[in-house]
Amino acid sequence: MEIYKFVFSPIEVNTYLLADQSGDCAIIDCGCYDKKESGTLEKFITDKRLNPVLLLNTHCHLDHIFGNRFILERYNLRTWSNELDEINRLDAVQHAMLFGLSMDIPPEPEGFITDNQIVKFGDTELVALHVPGHTSGSIAFYSDINGCVFTGDALFAGSIGRTDLPGGDFDTLIRSINSKLFVLPPSTVVYSGHGDETTIEKEMRTNPYFS
Image 1 (tube, rainbow, N blue to C red):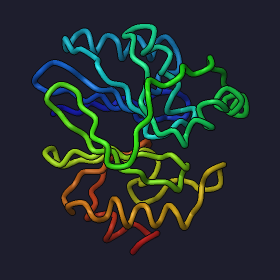
Image 2 (image 1 turned 135 degrees about the vertical axis):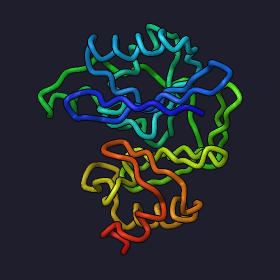
Image 3 (image 1 turned 60 degrees about the vertical axis):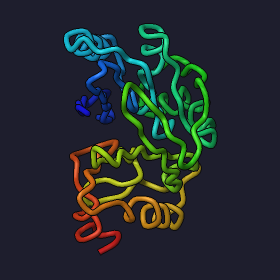
């Protein structure tokens, strides 16, 4: 599986494009904020001759769903997310205003993902891990074969997601990371919603919230 990262929007969210040998690809947390950014993603997909078949959201805070309407209009794909995060999707337009930003009403999801559900694109499978605490419906997507996990805003390199927003809870997030992420193989590469990648081993050893 090839993994490509794009940093989009004034909030600098990581958007991931995952592609395998089938030519199909999945998009995680499409954060394209304007036409220039959506054009960048579209050109990359076209140049690589990829076929987008799956749109996933780790959670539905505004920066992670800015590009969902573009993906629907361009590739006819609606997102898959956790139902507990619908409140954030529905409040996204109002939240954008608090940041001095604007956005259209995010499209309704295609469906909802539950803990341990397998999602597929091409020849690739990802396992959804429910990791509440940053939001109630936060989901991480894990690939055993490829040795990586996409954690959204649950776990960062050297930090964890904020827990002072609606649906956030510090103790819940710590339990989620310990029970769902720190049980993965130590060499697992962590691709977070913001910032650089890290590994499970490094975060267990050096993350100040755990070390």
